[in-house]
Length: 144
Image (cartoon, rainbow, N blue to C red; front, side):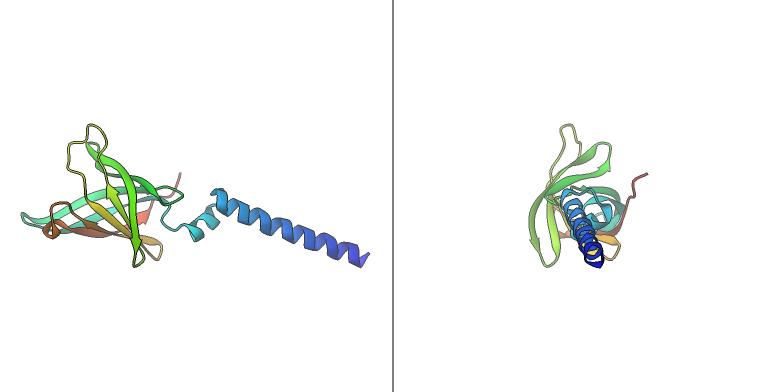
């Protein structure tokens, strides 16, 4: 009787562990997903810096896909587009900003994203040169 109970208990624990691992790989378990892919999700915040015209500030929304290979960015309804992973170094994921058709701003900036606790640090390297670089800490947008 005890041996049958022990075998059943071990089988149930094994099934639970396998189910959790499968959910993490498939992205179905939100908690496991955040542990293995901390950049995945929607982030928003303000990036600021100094430009040749003085202080500059932009409100940004960044969406990183579950595989962290791309996503999207948006500064406004007329300034947005896809993100494409370019490289990873020193803990940063470097995403190239491309423009959506009809966008009225310049593309080519690079968003360098790095987890910062529960937040995401975004250091933007501008296509206009270092005098236009911006940075800021973004917060995760939770689904409703």
